[in-house]
Length: 286
Image 1 (cartoon, helix red, strand yellow):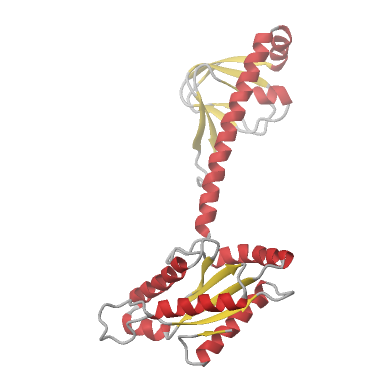
Image 2 (cartoon, one colour):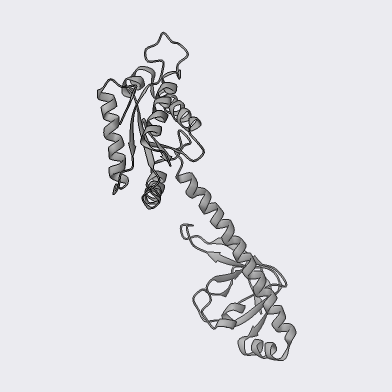
């Protein structure tokens, strides 16, 4: 069979139970996905390779459209003839098995690569772009599991909610770029002070959240006081004569109670946070 460039050899979703062996030229699978209607190249088949064998073996429709890249010469074997060759020649059967094994391995490798890429982007979507710590999407994905585990094991679970003090005034005075630096500095302090088993999350805006597995109320309070003290010593602006050169934050702590879910748990820490703000800020409350 002689085919011209751009001529379709196999059309998708049609019954064409024949084996095509490329003697000269190149065939390729074409896709119209995400290309605005224009064809996009995919897998290519060079001289010595074949297409169409799966539809011969399972008697299903062709899954893809395959065209000739340039003028090509093909050997066409009808389904009945191929089955006769398989019945009469072990060599033909072995070659088809090798071909199918190669295709399966190639497909599996492609799926693994796609899975890794997908997992990479999934993980990236769980990281806050400004601070590099976990974001709220991660929180709503992982905290319910930590809560469920804590309820099941009866091991304590505590959280710390932190909110930078007078942050609107800080932004208005020094600008949003310096404000971003303040948030980054606060996140760095929190993240660097925690244990490997703890988690720091940017809850939103200038609010940060710390998750402390296997940590009771008293220990959580001590961690929050340490973070509060360390944060108050952090200088964002080098010029100490400017107003608000340091970062301070108010902290609210909560330990998981029986029957609490993610919403009531976070609400408890948030309520404690506002008690700290109402008491004068730059302090911890529970």
